[in-house]
Amino acid sequence: MDKKFRIGIDLGGTNTVFGIVDTDGNIICEDSIKTQSYPYIADFIDASIECMKPLIAQVGGIDVIAGMGIGAPNGNFNTGRLVAPPNLPWKGSTPLAQLFADRLGLPVRLTNDANAAAMGEMKLGAARGMKDFVLITLGTGVGSGIVANGQMVVGHDGLAGELGHIRVLTPLPPRLCSCGRQGCLETYCSARGIVQTAVDLLASTSQQSLLRNIPGAELSTYEIYKAARQDDEIARRTFAVTGEILGSACADFTTFCSPEAFIFFGGPMKAHEFIMPSIVKSYKENVLNIYTDMPQFLISELMDKNVAVLGAASLI
Image (cartoon, rainbow, N blue to C red; front, side, top):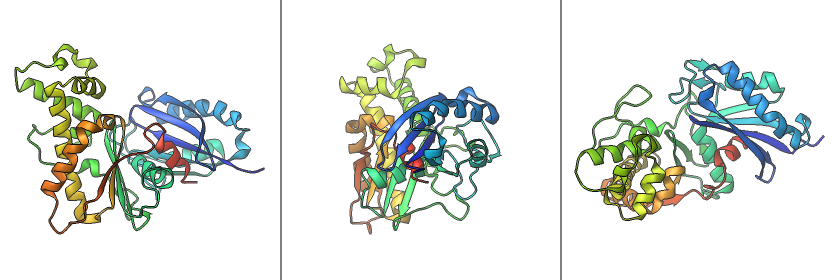
C-alpha cells in the first residue's frame, strides 16, 4: 500500500498538536491536547495515541502512514530523547521517539521544535531556496532553528540551537528563566516575557494606559497588541523594548552564522508592525561593522499554518 501520509507532532509547552500531512505538504487533519494536563509521560503517550486514532482512521489507517516526526523543546535529533525540557512537565531524559515507535509500530524521529519549524519554513515558507537562515519562534518560550550551508545545525550531541537561552543585557530587571539561569532571551521575548515587560513598565510610571484596566491574569500579548493599535504608549513601548532586545541578540547571532535572513514565527509576531522596526534598528546599532550585508528580517509565511507540524512530518 502506498504510504503517502506522515504524522507531524508539535509538542509545545501549552498544547501538543497532531497533524496528518500528505506528500505535497498539506495538513489533512489535525487535533490537539493540553500538554500540561499530563504530568506523567505514560499518560501523555496514552492521550496522544487516543487523539491520533481518529486522524489515522480518517486517512485510511496505519498502513498508509510512512512514519512520524516530532518537534519538541530540547528534542535530541541524534538520540530521539527529550533532555530536561524547561517548559514541559517531564524532567530528566525521556526516550520519546522510542515510546511512540513501540506503540504505533512506525519509524519515529524527534528534533527540537524550532528545528522542525525551520525545516517547514525551508520547504514550504519564507526560506524556500535559502541555505543560510535563522528561524526564531516566539511562544511559551523562545526557540530557534539554524540552517547553515543548507543543513540544520544540531551539534555533536543533537542539542545545538537553543538561542532562547543566550543571556542578554537589557534595561529591565534580570529575570529567572525556567532553565534555572537568569537573564535568558526567553525571559524577555517569549509571550510571558513580553507580558512581564508590560507589567514592569506599568510599575515604573504613573502614566495612563489601557493596560491598567486589564486584570493581571488576563493580560496577554494580544491585549497589549490591541492597546498598541489604539496608540497606547505603554503598549507600544512594550513591543519596542522587545524588538530592541531581539535585534541586539540577532546582531550577536550574526557573528557566528552570518545568515541571509532572520525569520520570525509565533503569536507575538502578529504585532510585527510594532516589533519589527525596533528589531531592525537595534540590529543596525549593535552588529559588528564587518557584516555590511544586511540580512532580511521576515515574518513566517506559514503563520496561519502549523509550521512545526509540517516540519516535523518532513523528518520522515
